[in-house]
Length: 230
Image 1 (cartoon, one colour):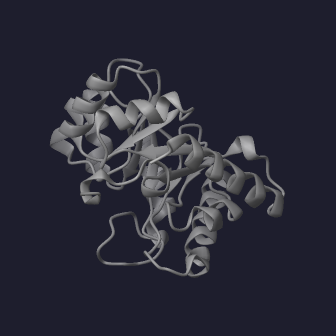
Image 2 (cartoon, one colour):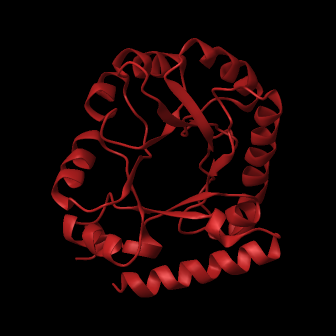
């Protein structure tokens, strides 16, 4: 697994996708999803130039962050149980799965005075029952209700597209999230500038970028999957 080479390939894909969609490549940030790789591989990813690390399990993510001890921006990208907020709130820089008011309430409860918790609101654009997220029709109402939690700062929206071998099929999901993001931005909510879009993974990140992704979450295509490599 040559992480440097993989990162160069992804960066070239980003440049080409941004060129096609009249965007700046610097606007797209790569999050290395390290759930299925070792602490050592995570270190190598950072040494290769990765600036963002994503974990989706509380205890494992905290252990990895402690073991790696490298300068990086840490993202919690998985579903977060309210009872685990206390463990992670001061350890991660971004949370990608705010999907219910009870979670926002817990963020508010555990935040230090004056602290800002940077969140993405997860939206279930595809409508799959297996996926978490706010229903698109309920998003604007949900966003307005977040005003009650001043510690919560919504930087953007996140979604997961259905897994498919034909990435083009995911385009409506990504374009749908972009349109929802634009609707939220039009509200001009001071606590929810909502300028970012977290969408796209190893199999579909090129399409996601063409549709406006600013954060892409890449695991296998960047750092591999050591859990299945034996």
